[in-house]
Amino acid sequence: MMLVKTAFVVIIIAIASKIVTFFLGALSKRRRLEKALANFPGEPRHWLFGHLHLMNPGKTGLDKRVQWTNKYKYGYPYWLGPFHAYFECGHPETVKEILSTAEPKDDLIYGTVRLWLGDGLLLSTGAKWARNRKLLTPGFHFEILKPYAKIFNECSKVLVNKLSHLCERGSVEITHHASLVTLDSLMKCIFGLDIHCQTESKMDPYINSVSELSVLVIKRMYNVLHYNDFIYYNLTSDGRQSRRALESLHAYSNAVIRKRKSLLGTNQATNQVEGRKYVNFLDILLSVKDEYGQGLTHQEIKDEVDTFMFEGHDTTASGIAWCLYNLARNPEHQKVCQEEIDELFSRKGCTDLEWNDLANLTYLTMCIKESLRLTPAVPLITRITTRQIQLPDGRTLEKGLPIRINIYNLHHSSHVWDNPEVYDPSRFLPEKVNKRSPHAFIPFSAGPRNCIGQNFAMSELKIVVALLLHHFEFSVDGSKPAEPMSEIVLRAKHGLHLFLKKRQ
Ligand code: HEM
Image (cartoon, rainbow, N blue to C red; front, side, top):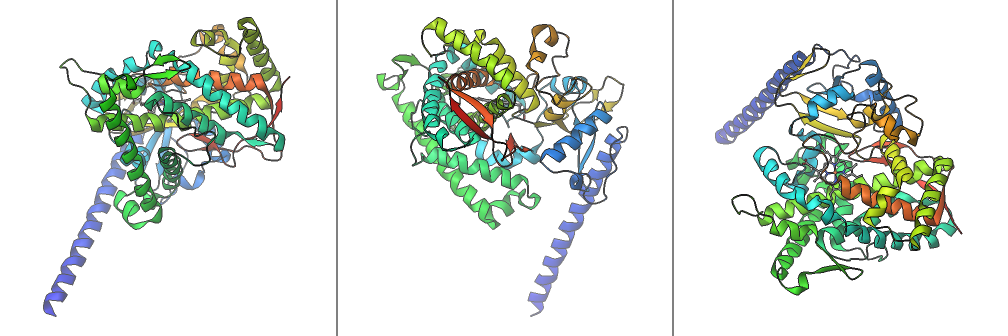
């Protein structure tokens, strides 16, 4: 009995000392953050919630933070509860300083996807990131990307065909279809696999897991109690479902990589689209070598393909869906795009877009960019400073400070844009672009850790949107208004509902 009592007391003391250590650590972190942010005025904060209670991920929360950006030009403190704070900024000068080096990312948001993406480009840091970024960059050279135009055409045509049946039944929620078209093209470009995910009702297991995990990651982001891996994966049903989806996803990528490795060098390893050869990303990852002749390990290859799949699908889908929505709301710009596309197709005598055609779609490109400004697919990124950073007004950001670069705020800031809420593609006329800071518009981030897939994404966006505009006229379904939600990507709370009318 005595032994049980002693054990009980020891356990209580151990737990109490853990709690005390946690609070002392948290208090010291809070003091450090308060000191680092002392020179930056901001909105008053609640002692417990910080600024959390003022925020929601929907339109009112987004608008409120834009107001703060207009009020506190170079940035302001943003407290997430009593112990964790960020310096949040959305001014080109601040952003330029922070993004000029490869600062690591803060784990609070990306920690939720670490088990999925491992140490791929998005999450890795330091020497590992630098080596792999250098090794993978040639994989995004336009000579490699050029043949992908055929894949984007092929996938867009499947979508056009599908929508031409659906559009007669009322408005269509376009984000879902945009998501499937990007998954379809990524499976071809990354793995060289044609899984017909746009048309087959029985989903491929990999696509199933990616879709399931994309939903679960967002759910997790909204529940701070689920941030701890141990609690999430062992004690919650969502965590257990995530674990199962992760196991299935990793088993799939492991199997595809192994199979591909065994085929390399044989003629079965050739990918073809419409009879022409192309190199998929997996083959590039399997063949790259650094200056010491070392390639990537199996684990590294798996982390990179999972990262491309994660980074490449929801982001591009959000870009496509919001672009169609913005053009549906602004029929005068939609019409100019359609004239440009029709004219190009009649000159070519076919409705296939090749890589070299994309430079001729100048108005469409301006409309896509304006859409990425008004509704940026990635609304927010984070960093942790590894050095002291001097701001243009002389104030400094201390080493170790967590930073939120709010791309949405930057793109809506009245310090940068006239009438920021108005959709106006002429902002992207060369003479206007030349007058702006290159850091005023950063949908793909900027600096050494910018998006490695931006040319891939822009060409896919142009081809999918162009082919859809050629076949349909889009208008918004006013009975289901769109409400933007800032998550890992910018979504619409209840989807983006559009009417599609077939063009003659
Ligand atoms: C419209 C589509 C896209 C948008 C708006 C977008 C945006 C971004 C942004 C803002 C970042 C910086 C993230 C951060 O700092 O935390 C990023 C990084 C990245 N993106 Fe994209 N992206 C898009 C499509 C793609 C595609 C298609 C791929 C690959 C096929 C891709 C692969 C990556 C990777 C690997 C990184 C990490 C780069 C690094 O840290 O070195 N992205 N992207």
